[in-house]
Image 1: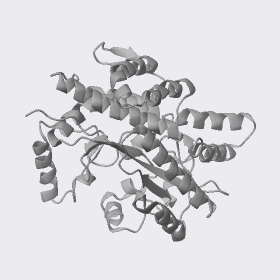
Image 2 (image 1 turned 120 degrees about the vertical axis):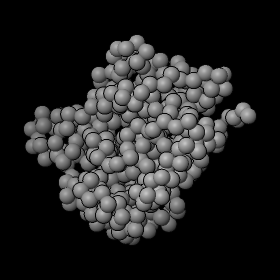
Image 3 (image 1 turned 90 degrees about the horizontal axis):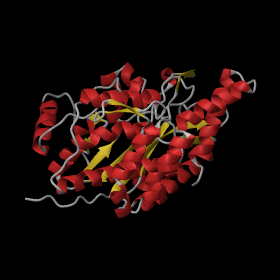
Image 4 (image 1 turned 45 degrees about the vertical axis):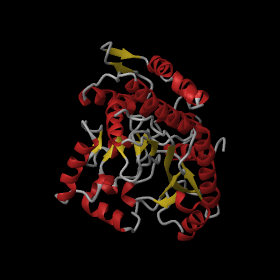
Length: 378
């Protein structure tokens, strides 16, 4: 029986860090009134995250990239407006430049209490934020098939999104230190491969029946079938500080999914590469971002990232036109030209030190720039 074209509606989730305006440090115990006001204005589209210094937003189901852009802009601007009343500001960055993980407090909810108890120091180090993009793929077996193929492109999306070069006040030498912290958790990294949705469920149920996990939401792969929605959820990327970069990542992802479906409908498919090989590109993406290129496994050599993006844009041209997001995917060229948030943070730090600032003052300058860039263009 032929599989019908997936709906390809999208949803975007973003996690923000909340900083104090005066100290630029993470807030330790934000006012409950702030969260209540956010919930009153945004309803179910906002919720607390694992740490009290975090807040999460999620768009509704969106029929287009333009719709997702409008809704995400409203979410960001509302959080910034409400937080400002309490002398706080959100920053869209996957790590804070100088906050100490030992000083953070997790949110008192049953699920988060269980995570803190089970994961111990691993959970306490989770002072990180990400963004997730859901694309509706109605057919369950198609969802599994496309997950395996789309994994090849995850390092490309990671490289374009990097926003976590600092950890605990130190330059890490990585463009995305977030993944180092995240990979300490179990059930992370590249997804397993399955022949069907039924096979995937059988593996999940073994873990549930053994009492290892409560449900499939505790499988935290870089891409996964959502346990709550009929979607394929991309989770590898850092959160982008500028909203137009977020939208580019989302547009590229939905176009990749459409392209892979289009290949399948013509009895073709993307070549499968082992996780061993794709993991090398994953490492290069979070170590170097877009600066040092990725491996083209067909050629067996490193290729400049700009060249890879041009190849990708050509692959998905038909899909970007069909989904009316050509400008959004082509913004990837701008990201390459001016750099990601990680580049900007490093430059802001170095420039401040060059002007005579102490390291502590330079780190606060990075936070100031993140506050500004998080709401730029809204």
